[in-house]
Length: 97
Image (cartoon, rainbow, N blue to C red; front, top):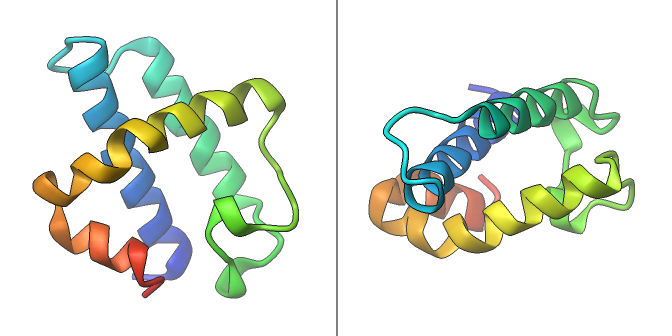
């Protein structure tokens, strides 16, 4: 699995965790589904491809300001919690592998 595909899977898991806990839903709501689609489009168009840094450390911010705020909120909520739901993704993301 490539770096972009791994990032997509991780962001999708984090948004799903956020939606399940914050929106009290068993399936993704439309807002979260749109956020996943937006994140996937941004990752598909990432100019760094294989050399992609973590989005929070990237020199080019490709998210629109409103979407950037939303994804940051999701990451702040899901980041610490993903350890308990998917430890492999947590450590892969933490150590950049």
